[in-house]
Length: 84
Image (cartoon, rainbow, N blue to C red; front, side, top):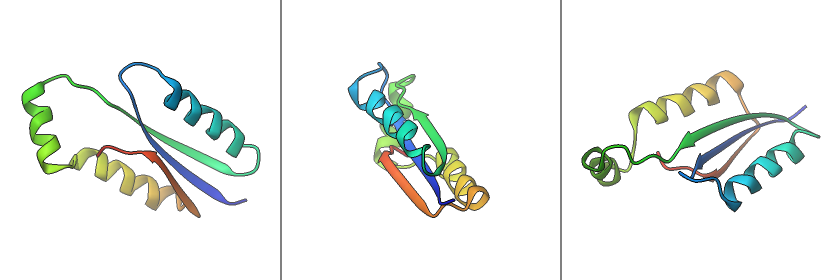
């Protein structure tokens, strides 16, 4: 069975895009082995968030995605929305 790694960053408030991703994941699971990686789009500290935006990356999130790719070994990586 082919494997799909689904990556998505959720919004602060549940909305249509997040629900669409959940529905797509459910549909994909009917024919594929799916592993989901969700990140939360949080603004806890505006100062820290400013530097994350400037650098356009989070080492913690990048390591998590790299680990998931190496451990799950997906045939397909489906990125819906990913803010690293």
